Length: 272
Image (tube, rainbow, N blue to C red; front, side, top):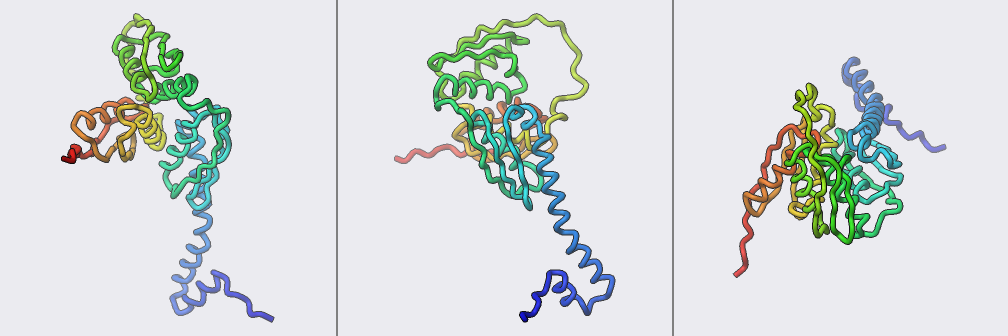
């Protein structure tokens, strides 16, 4: 008969038999409680993902399942567009306790890349990330890469900014803005800023997706970290104008309170 293999608990007892009784009991209690703590963290990660601003807003019509095991999160299910697969991963990766993300989400009925439908989704998504324009109320029409914007803007500045954001989407050839400017009476500022309603992981995910979707910043290697709505960006820029552009775009992302831009200006040296 083979001797019994020592269990983790007997191993703890063997190596601590000469310690004071109180120390032994403390170590045994911590050892026994460790798996429970890991399970609690995994449960919190799964709950945080489903209750995040991104999942409840942009991904609400997608069927995404989140399973965490010791901080390693596996995403499964289906989404209706490629950007949503990336958005889900970016959001979950930013949650406290997450070590890594295994993204197994399948894209269902995704339109051909660079088609008008594909561009339509990119423009709508880009507008939705920004707080100074109305992604949901702006009507977007695409024909052979030409965007026509319709709907109502709250000001001439919002109308112009909507044009600017749509024009900066990779693949867009031209923008025709037919939006009307509404005449609205002055309203008191909201007592609760939107930033307090959006979690940090969702803010970081929106920032990364927005920077990737804009033609002017898509090639930038920018790091993003968010703490209580304050976004810190790092990386490199070719000049001060590029650095300022990142600050401008990030400042206008839903939920952002302020931006700390630590990007380093590194001019490109031509090889002569």
